[in-house]
Amino acid sequence: MSNVSADLIWEIARGNNAYLVKRRTGGGVQFSRDPLNLANKQSRKYSGFVNNKAVGLHSSDKDSITLTTKKSKHHNKPASNLHNVSWGANKPSRKVYSGIVAHTAKNGYRPDLRAESVARASAIRRSHRPTKETPEKKARGAKAKKAAETKSS
Image 1 (cartoon, rainbow, N blue to C red):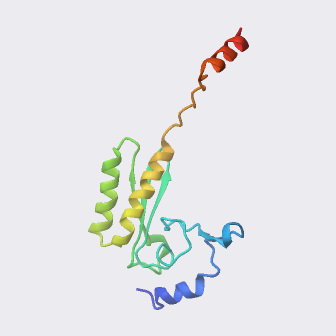
Image 2 (image 1 turned 45 degrees about the horizontal axis):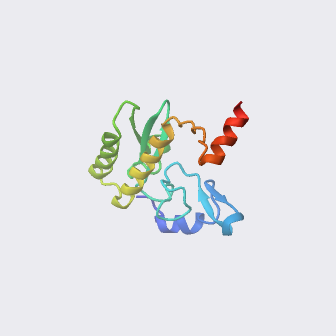
Image 3 (image 1 turned 90 degrees about the horizontal axis):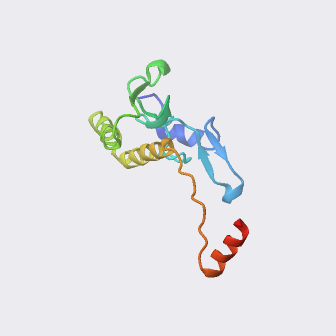
């Protein structure tokens, strides 16, 4: 634990920090670029730089997923503050999701972030899939088919 409470750090840094992204459109919504923020929302719950135990997921290399966890013991040593675990593209999705849940549960990480971490991993996996080409639209109805035949002829 640090000498300063996480609540005090949040109250000081919530209005202005390096990860904050402010948008005037959409009612002045605020986002976060914090790598340990699962939802990319500017809130105390998801903020990785404030919480002693935080979880982050990101895509790395070729279609692999990396889980980054923050160690609570080394809060003043940035080099040894983070722990990374990776799953390759050849691992089935269920194994990746259960691995994420097991890694966070066994090490005593926040149970309120488990569902968000699995959802983030699922979104990363979905982004790795190749996109399908949209099929050509078929003519529907007799008049449309007749018009399509005259155009092609």
